[in-house]
Length: 221
Image (cartoon, rainbow, N blue to C red):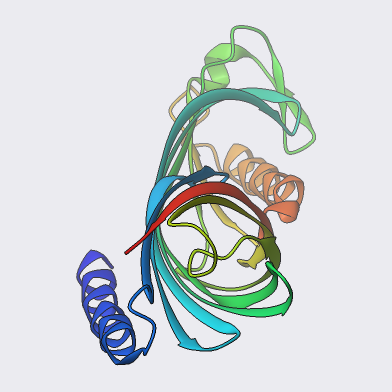
């Protein structure tokens, strides 16, 4: 996945630089730093028409947090790397509509070590029977994106702020779940663990509409 992202990035950067070099406006390129729900990152913007800009960006997000999923407390580790290729259409002043695609290289791991009896797939098991629960969440690598925003890195002063609000349409997440307790090899427990996995997938169904909210500071060349 990383090699594919690098190849796509180099290709799109070449396209943007070509557009920027061909613009009559010498300020047709801008760089930006940004923060938001995709993490910290940067963008390169180029104008391809009077009211149309293109952007490519890289973002990284690394979080560790606790979350109750299907009534069990999990330690979650989220490691996101994303690359975005977007087109902005300016319709009123600095207000724009945006569409494009976001490429994800991600890792989401789950871990829980119950200290009391917990319900697994509708059946209560002791902490010793469960042991430690290990899980991982997978989503599609490529997600279409639509959104709106305010700010134009190629219009006005050399410095400025911009913001974006949109949705990346990932897909329903796929969850792997395992345990290492006393019942780990029991077929009935494994069947209930599979039901528990399905419940977790249902709880994470909202994740397929990933909110993309960001604010950035740009500099125009």
